[in-house]
Amino acid sequence: MNEDLAHYLQHRTSQDWIDALNDAGVPSGPIYAIDEMFADPQVDHVGMAKSVHHPELGEVQVLKNAVNLSSTPDMDYRPTPERGEHTDSVLAEFGYGAEEIERLRVAGVI
Image 1: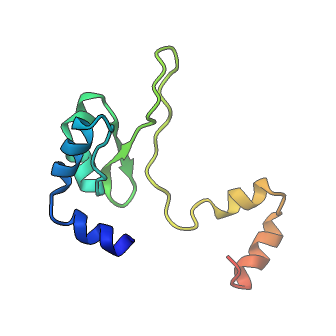
Image 2: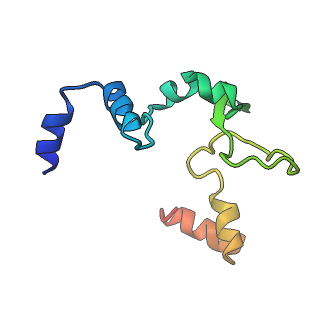
């Protein structure tokens, strides 16, 4: 079935399908790649992008929370962590001590 649908759907553009679905009363929109998402004028219009400083990449854009409450202050947005950046603190939250975490690291577990 997926193969049949893919064959059928590929004959029109994504925008054609979005327009047809919206015209039929089915709310729909594009599925973006990251660069496409930040280029969408609506993302800018509703203020969904936030610039944050990444220690290696400099200024990068992240997506803000989709729910914005008028009496709630903005969250502290940060760049995506590097792999393993929070390993020690997460394991500590689960009760692992510094020596045990180091033993796991030496053993190649983390």
